[in-house]
Length: 314
Image (cartoon, rainbow, N blue to C red; front, side):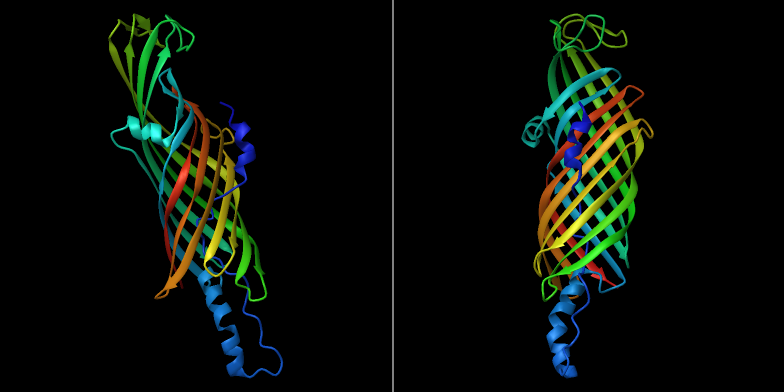
């Protein structure tokens, strides 16, 4: 599977509702007394605080579910499966399925930091051809059933800088901000694969199976991959926001040939007792091309996301 075919999609997004403010309150016009000036700027000041940059330090937590689908090739010890599974397919095949994510964002003046993690568990079933003395081959006449359960986890950290913070509209209740960042992602995979032969076959590596025999194959692997990216947040109104994130990485570091990610989200935010709260939904896609020690993960993990956000200002 060629991940570079997906590169056009990789300018996108994850501004998981990072707190943003869009400029200072407008100054009082000449001839306006102090009381009138305070009244005229009270709403914009509060909206700016809700955005985030009116304070030097903003901290927020985001938690959400990821309804994952998988497309690509995954395998361990030479036994590979073509994966083309939607969330509904995986839900039907699996006794349990998880796709959980969370992130912690910290903004200090124009410097931005994020730590986030995700975990999924999915099960794939596939009937494939197996060469008599070679790799799996869908054109072969001898067939086997492959069942694979994969637990995958991702941990990410990045640091960046706010390149642009621009208010929009006369009342400055809308605005745009753009961040550039660099970081690293750690991925860990745990495979549990079983192969059941429909006839006498030889698996990759030379293992012979008689008809009806089953062979369990397990393996795990982890790797680091650096990435660089951009994210943008658009404050449409006092409450409604859009966010985008895109990054690319891998760069042949630690056997990661290439990786890309896009995330887009839209949501509604409000303030309550000094907290900034929000609900949102969107879509996330993560593509990775990795191969090491017999583990192959050339897969795009993607699907809708939905969740909540809570933050406060120092």
